[in-house]
Amino acid sequence: MTEHLPVIGIDVGGTGTKAVLADASGAVLAQRHRPTPPRAERVLELACSLVAELSEDAAPAAVGLVVPGVVDESRGVAVFSANLGWSDVPFRALLAERLGLPVAFGHDVRAGALAEHRLGAARGTADAVFLPVGTGISAAHVQNGRVHSGGGYAGEIGQVPVAGGRLEAVASAAAISRRYQERTADPVAGAAEVAQRVAAGDAIATGVWEEAVDALGGALIWLTALLAPEVVVVGGGLSQAGPLLFDPLSRRLEADWPLARAPRLVPAELGDRAGSLGAALLAADLAATKINRTEMG
Image (cartoon, rainbow, N blue to C red; front, side):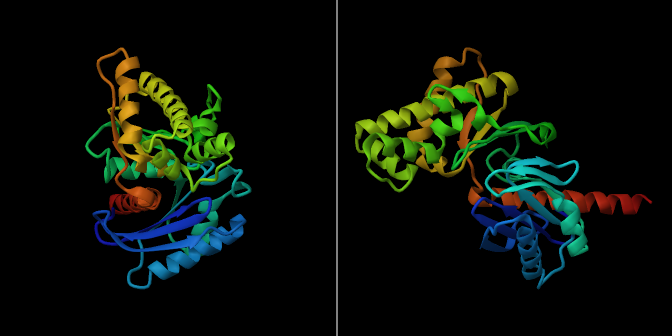
């Protein structure tokens, strides 16, 4: 973070938007949470409102904004979001014009990976994968301290075909509850309740859970083969299952990965603030770059 001035990070989610005011150490000084409105124009209005609220006590050096979907960080453009219904929105330029401040723009999961790498469960490592498993599934790869973007398309592992469909349709938290309900006609309050039924010995819940874990385990094996991360940080709602998730995933890696080095599997530390903290880090990096350029001439 910048040496003197705080920064603001805003994480636009499919249903909720989180914002933090953070200091030079990454400590959160203030935070806000609002429902995500429809349409990009109203998201911009919300972002400006959040910046105004969080700037009451201290003017920020910069603002970071991260969104889901396909994001081109180099152009500052939200290329596409099916859930939020936008395409080719130049968020960075539009928000900077309205705020009169430097604006960093990025992808929510890649920002979460940056935060977990610098401040959370992957700190101290060179190479890590951040794997949030919630309503959907995606991943972000940190290599030598830098998050790989792939032109905005890197990390969409939820779309990879696995036995039973695409990974997201088998192993996400949403898929687990949906698949259980399809087999039992018994409504459940999300994957957490399915996990409780697994622990209680429910055979159908156990079958759904094992299929999800097997699909995730396969994805971890080819991520390990391709990227060789030191650590895989598992986040999202499913990570709250604890040993019920991590123990079988670890066993799968030990059984099916033939090489000596397998990544450590650890739960995310930053919870649902990873995206907004990552957005704040992007803002801090941008502000520091501008300060350095000014000092150099």
